Every structure is written in C-alpha cells, then in structure tokens.
Amino acid sequence: MTLYIDGDACPVKAEAERVATRHKLPLVLVSNGGLRPSQNPLVQIVVVDQGADEADKWIAERCGPGDIVITSDIPLAAKCVEAGARCLRPNGEAFTATNIGQQLAMRDLMADLRAANPLGMQGGGKAFTKADRSRFLDVLEREVRAAKR
Image 1 (spheres, rainbow, N blue to C red):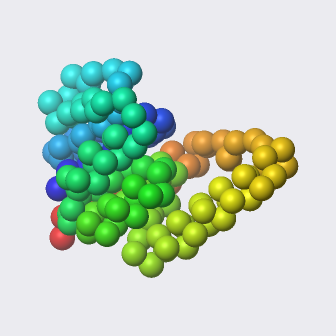
Image 2: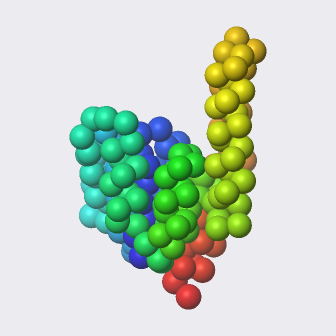
Image 3: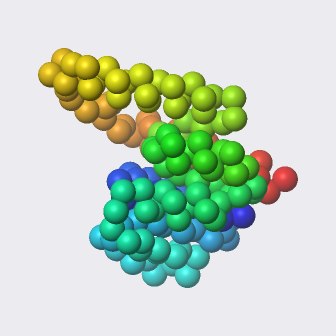
C-alpha cells in the first residue's frame, strides 16, 4: 500500500504524512516542483516535468488496488478509481466507483457554464476549513485501516 498525493496545491500534506508514519506506509508526493523535502524516510518526493497533467499521469500510471490517492483533480480521481485505488479529496470526501461519473459530469457542466458566461461565474470555491482538515484525517485513517484488511 502506498499513499500518493497530487502535491502541487494539496493543503493536507502534513496530515497525510502523519498518518503514513503512524502506519509505516510509503508516501509519494508528486508535483512539478517547489515542495520542501521531508526528513521522513517514508516520504518520497517526485518532481515531474513541467506541463499540464504530468503529475496526474505519473500517479495514474502507478497507483492500483490497495493504494490511496489524495487529489482534488476529478479526471485523475477517475483514472485512479478505475485502477482500483481508493481516492480522497483533501476535505475527506471519497471518490468512488459509484460517484465518479456524477463528479465528472458536474465538472464538465460547470466548465460549460463558465465558458458560456465567464463574467457570471467568477470567484473561487469554498475556503478550506479546520473541519475539512479534521474530516480528512478521520477519513484517511479509516481508509488506511480498510485497505489493510
């Protein structure tokens, strides 16, 4: 079992490292660069080439059953779920075989709405909260335990 993190904009790297350390699991942080090295021997930092979706491709090619992927990227999550990996958003929401189709459809719908009315759909998503961080820790712990069974 390996934890993979789509690391460029992930707000829960430290929390995932704590869980990985507690369970003695390898953790792979994948990004285009700019991540601080960890002194933890369980943490591997992989820097991929610059370019769209290079980190996503790297993770998708390597993850599989028993692995856990942490990402906000819905197309990456779809590939990981298809490969048999467990997949979580940084706020603790799980991507699953039963919900990934709906997630992809909603993403595409929102992209179409933004393209049709770029001035009407401005602003970012919800702010990341302490409750999100806490939920993530709880869900990741449960997912690790479930994957070990």
